[in-house]
Image 1 (cartoon, rainbow, N blue to C red):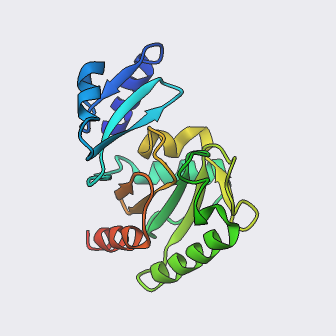
Image 2 (cartoon, rainbow, N blue to C red):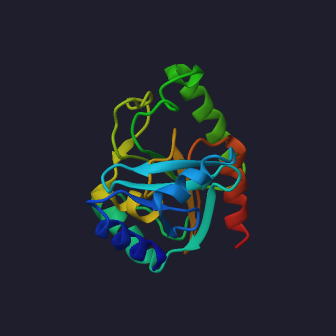
Image 3 (cartoon, one colour):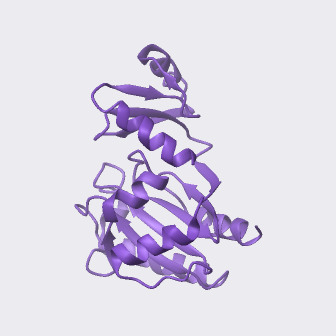
Length: 202
């Protein structure tokens, strides 16, 4: 329910710049700028809705419950022509589009991306048998587009549910039954595996 309310809140603000704190409370530009004076905070932007949200560098995750997980999987399977089992854990790696974070450094090299992906897949497999989806909003800049089965976000389903803002690099969400754990922005292998372990205990 929270996600749906947020979506309509953002839609109502589409023609004006709107600012939110870490808890999605609307704030004015002056308060927003004061947050950014503290180095523990930064911001993410939703360019289509002209909205900006404060983020805490040390608290970039969100744990929640999907109101109707069966409906979610049914819609995902229908839109992407898949047959995912809703009782099996699912990890979605989400690419928001090209930005300075995902287009520079050593991971600008395709073979480094592939090496990292292979290592992460091995670590995940050691924990549980999971389904994996790679979803993009805009495919420009994806180094492994021809190596993995990347899918366009169907009707912005994943974006609207989990990633309302452009979080730098990539993000991911782990879904297990009706629970989910999302991580916003650049992540390590440990963040993926620890979030998976956490949800498997729920």
